[in-house]
Length: 203
Image (cartoon, rainbow, N blue to C red):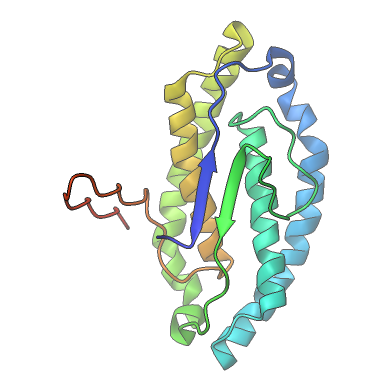
């Protein structure tokens, strides 16, 4: 199983008023995330140095960066209309929130070379994340109109949003050194009746 898991609860009925004013309502959470992200960027630099020299990701820094990823993903989920629930102002795990980001513990050791050359290795992931980020924006734009008019979120649009945000979240985990494995588009399907599940598609 990939070390970063994203799941989102689907709710068909949505608030038209909250959706209409979503760009404004998201501003306070966005400002907090910007500050959080600035601190996380320095933490990632420290983690990069630590991994390159010791092969380990300091647990305290890892937990801080993982918290930032949870915070940023919840903000994205709210901003892009995956959920109507306002994101909590922290990076702690919250089982009550409809968008869950499960991040595994730090590995006992990390590949120093993969970390040293992460800025090169990240290029294919960044390209795919950019494309899916565009899909996320387009699907959210369409969802905004549909929800404001009908008060409902179509399942098809929700699935598109989830697909894009799942990959973007995992790509962010790769950027932040939380994982050293390229993110898959989807997880392998569970085995049924003794069959062999298809492999996950990876770049």
